[in-house]
Length: 172
Ligand SMILES: O=P(O)(O)OC[C@H]1O[C@H](OP(=O)(O)OP(=O)(O)O)[C@H](O)[C@@H]1O
Ligand SMILES: Nc1ncnc2[nH]cnc12
Image 1 (cartoon, rainbow, N blue to C red):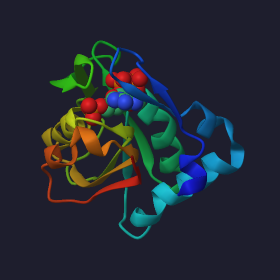
Image 2 (cartoon, rainbow, N blue to C red):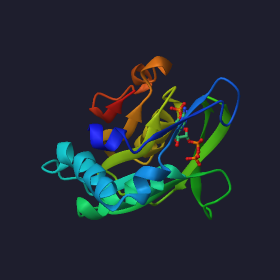
Image 3 (cartoon, protein in one colour):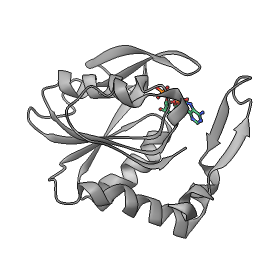
Image 4 (cartoon, rainbow, N blue to C red):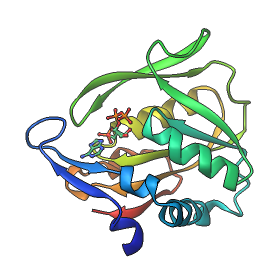
C-alpha cells in the first residue's frame, strides 16, 4: 500500500485551520497508482456477489464508479441534498468540518440487493454510517463498506454499526 500512500498529499489547515486534508488528486492522476488502488479496493469483495456499489458524493463517486466496473456491479450515487430528482430518501449527518444531508433515489436499489458502500476517506465516520442507514432504509443488504483512507485519530470506525466488514486500504 506504500505506492498508493505515496500518491496522497497531506495539506495542513485545509479547508479549515486544524484539519490535515488528504488530497487524493495525485493518486487519481497516476494511471498505475489509480489502477492499483481500484484493484486493491476490489480484492476483499470479489467473491461476495456485490450487485451494486453506492458511492458517496463527491470523491466517493470516483472510486465507487471504478470499483463498480471492476466488480461488474451497478453504480448508485448517494448525493448531497437537492441534487437527485424526487422521490428520494434522505438523512442528516455530521462531518469533521460541518453538517450535511445525504440522499438516495427511493427506488435506486431493490430489496435484498447486495450493496457495497464506498468513499475516499473515513474521518469521523458520520458520512459512511449515514449512507449505510440510507441503504438499509431501502431494504437492500449492505455487504460492507470500503474506503481508501481511514483517519485513525478521528476514530470513525465504531460509528459503522453494521455487522458487516469495513475495509480501509490505508490507515493514516
Ligand atoms: O467520516 P466523515 O467525518 O463523515 O468524513 C468523510 C467525508 O468527508 C469528505 O467528504 P466531503 O463532505 O468533504 O465532500 P466531498 O467529497 O464532496 O469533498 C470525504 O469525501 C468523506 O465523504
Ligand atoms: N482530513 C480529511 N481529508 C480529506 N477528506 C476528509 N474528509 C473528512 N476529513 C477529511
